[in-house]
Image (tube, rainbow, N blue to C red; front, side):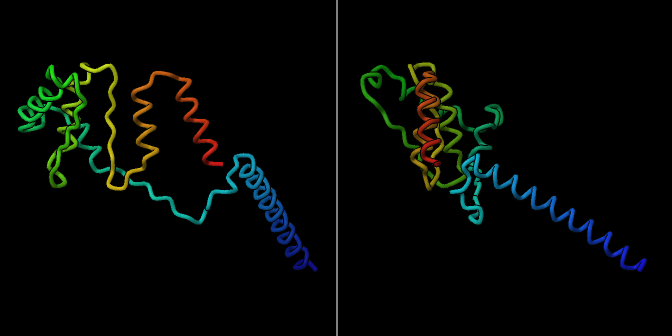
Length: 159
């Protein structure tokens, strides 16, 4: 009899834990519905990639060797008088790890004050066009209303 009382007490404790878990599951389901997460595939892993070029952007200029001449030459070419009449595209090409992104960023920093609007956007090998457009708009536009439209558009896109 005493043994049966002990097992009943243990069973009662387990039953209470199961009830608590069921209540917690119900709360999570309600939160999922209220945040409209029903369409999100939970089994699909999300790949978060960090662009390896980001570290180079934050390297101090003083630590860079041999960047002054190319930077100054490209900056001069971009802001010379005749280029103000025409749009210019500057392509910096080469193997990975040579400092192309850093050079482009240094040229950008040097000449950005010569233009009414400017943006510096990293584009990966598999570019996300909408992310690029949003990055450019967020850097070029000071218009909060326009940024609000982008947020609304993103919200509708995710629903």
